[in-house]
Image (cartoon, rainbow over all chains, first blue to last red):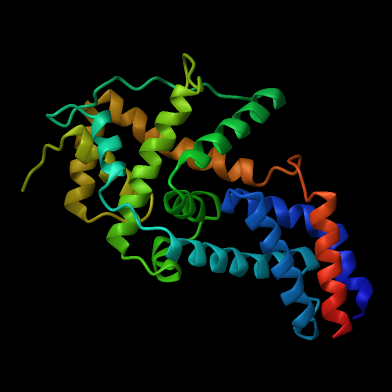
Length: 188
Length: 84
C-alpha cells in the first residue's frame, strides 16, 4: 500500500467516518479528531489489513475504538452527575406519589423526507442538551448499540451508574422530543 | 414482595429492560403496571421508538461531512506520517 491509499481513504470515507463520529461525540471538533486518529492508525496498521473486509468496514471498526478512547478521555474530565441536577430534573416529571405529573402525548410517525430531516435536527438538538457524559453513554447504547457491560468497562463507571445515566438520559430525551413538537395524534 | 410499582419506579424498570433481561419478579411488576397504566405503556413504546429513530438517523448519509479545512489538515497529517 502506498500514499494513495491513505489519501484515498480520506477522500472516499472521510465524510462517512465524520458523520458516524459526529453522531456519537456530539462535537465537530472531536469528530474531526476521531477521523484523523482513525486514518493515522489505519496507516500504521495497513499491513495487517488483510482486505477481507471492505475498507469502510475496516476503517469503521478502527473508528469505534477511537470514539471510545475520545469519550473515555472526556469522561475523565467531567464529573459524573450521580444525583445533582439530573435527579431534580427527573423529579419534576413525577408527582410526589410517583405518578406522572403530566400525561404523555402520543408521537407522530414521520414518513416524508422533510419530516425525517426535521426529526434528525431535533434529535441532535436534544442530545446536545444532555450532560456530556449522559449524551455519551446514551449514544453508545442507543445509537452504536453497545452492551451496557461493555460501556461500563470502557468508561470505567459502575453498572448501576450506567443505568442511572441511561435512564435519566432517556427520560430527558423523551421529554425533549415531546416538547419539540414531535407529538401528533394517533401513533406510538 | 411488592407487586404495585409507581410510575416513577416503572419507568426505571422499563428503561433497564431496554438494556438487560430483568429478573422474573421485576418483569411481572413491569407487565402488571404497563397493563393498567396508559402513560407508562406509552412511555415504554416511545423508548423503543426512540431507539429505532436514533439508529435510523445514525445511518443517514445525507448529513454534512468534513469541512475543507479539516480535510486538508488530516491529509497533511497523513502525509507527515508517511514522510517520517
